[in-house]
Image (tube, rainbow, N blue to C red; front, side):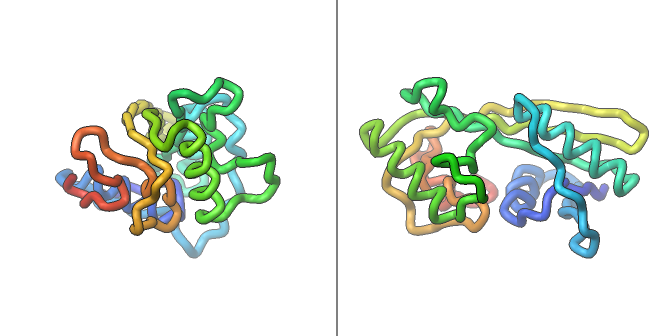
Length: 179
């Protein structure tokens, strides 16, 4: 089975490939030869944004598309400072921060919480078919965040280098796809 993952972000494509490594599913990102319009991620939840992207890309390609959106919650932060669905909107910047800026911002944020903090990611997934059929789920993934980054930084997913898997104690950026 072949499945299109609604992104051109190679780190996200690799993440889904790793999650589905034992399945008989060939994952590809959005075709690079098509200039897709920007899908406004203006939903109130990660699930709304994942749905918007999956439905739009499915309609454009006339194929089934899987899309994902993330939300981040860090224990110890007041509600107004929680990243939520706005992980890449930092310090009221209007442009998209670089991976380095993102890593620096969150490292300092965690440092202000004592250098370590627990938290979670919400990975909202939506599978949309051109027939209009939709399937959705959200996966909650607990994490420990640290202000000391791993030397291994994944392009497109820099925060993996300041997250520690609670079960293995390893940096997420250093884990294999099997782990």
